[in-house]
Image (cartoon, rainbow, N blue to C red; front, side):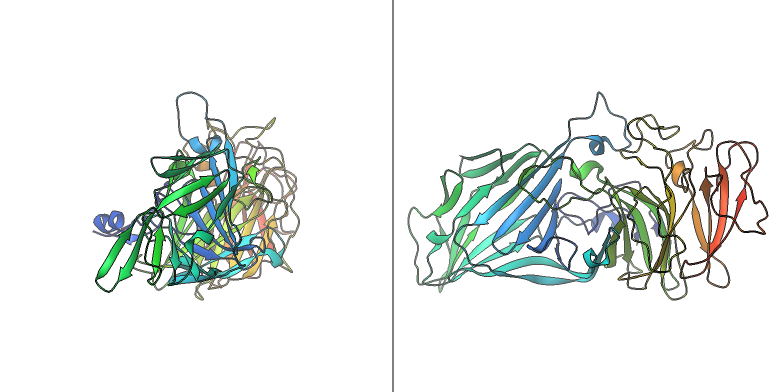
Length: 503
C-alpha cells in the first residue's frame, strides 16, 4: 500500500542530523517509510548565507557545527518554549539555554576545507531581504576534509553514522603538533579516557580516541589517549607507534541532554507536480551563527522560525532541493502549488518586516497589525499553550513564486492592511490545532495564482469592481485574490458577513 504522509512531526532542513527524523511527504509503503529514516549529519557549503569564516555547516542534535579554516564552532540549545512546542507538559518549560564554544586547531595552517562524498541534492537559503546574503545551490556532502591542517596531517570529518572526525597522519609526520584549544565552554574534564565539554545547554562528549596503522600484515591498533593541559587537548601514545607508516586517530562525538530532536520542526503543507515529485513545507527552528563565543541570548537572532521547503524525487528516495525562506520575524507556510513549469508557489503569513520580496512586487513593505501570541498581545485563539512563537508586530499575507530549481524568486510580495492578515485567529473558527494556518493557493486555467485566506484589516486592498468592496463586519472576513505570475498585480475582494469569517 502506498500513501502520502503529511505529518506534524520533526521537519529539519537541511536533511536531518543525528536523531532528527524527517516525516513530511514521502510516497512510500509504511515499511519503506520507517526503514528510510536516516541518522546522519550532512555538511552544507557556505555560499554567502553565513559569515565568511564558515566553510560548511552540519546540523547536530540540538544545534549546529560550523567548520572553519582552522577551527570548529558548535552552537547548542536546550529548553525554552521550543522544547514543548504545542505539546501539553507537566509544569512550566525548562529554562532556555543556548551556548556556543569553539575548538581551535592551535598552530595549524589556514586549511582549505573540501567537501567529501557529494550528495545529489542542494540547499538554498533565502534569509532576510538582502540578496547578497542569500545562498543558492549550496552543495551538500557526507563529509568534509581540512587538508594540510598541520604538516603531513589532514582532518577528515564524517557524518554517515553520527558525527566523527579523524586525523590522518602521513608517514614521518609528528602527531604531537595536533593541539585542540577549547574556548567558550563552561568546563573541560577527562573521565575514564573520555573528554567532557560542559555547556549550559548540555554536555558534548568526545569518546576515548582510537588509533591504528595500516601495516603490510594488516591493521594494527595503537594505544592513544587525550592529554589535557588547561584548555588545551593533545594526543598521547603510551607505547609509541611506527612513524614509517600512516597513522589514523579516530575520536567520536556524542551529544547528550539536548532537546532539539523532540520538537524543533513541524510540517504544514504538501503538494506534487505533473511528474510526481513531492513538495513539503514546514516551519524550521534554525540555529544562527554566533559573533562571539560563550553564552548566546536570545537563542535565535532573527525570530524563532523560518519557512522550510523541500522537493523530493517521485519515489521519495532522494532529495532534489531544500530551501529556507524568511526574515527577522516568524513566518509560516499555509499552502503550496506547482505550475506546468515545475515552479513552486507558496502562500503563507509572516511577521517579518524584512521578508525577501522581489523587485517589482505588488507590495514590498510590511503592513503589520496587532501582536499575536507575544508579550502583552492577544493569544492564539483556542490554543492553551500557543505554538511556541508569536508575532510582535502583527502579520501580513505573503506569496512567493520560486524558479523550478528554487535558486531564485520569480516573484515575492506582501499583501496586507493595518490589521492582521493571513491568519485565522477568531473563535469559533479555530476549533482544531493548525486552524490558524488554513489558507489555500491554487492556479486558474491561465496559470495565475488564486488565494483564499483571512483578514482583520478593513483597509486591505480590494479591486474597484470587487463583488464585496468593504469589510463585512465582526472581527474577521475571508479575503480572496488573484495575481499575475510575477506577483506584481492584484485583483481582490472581501467575502464575509456580520460575524467572523475565514478563507
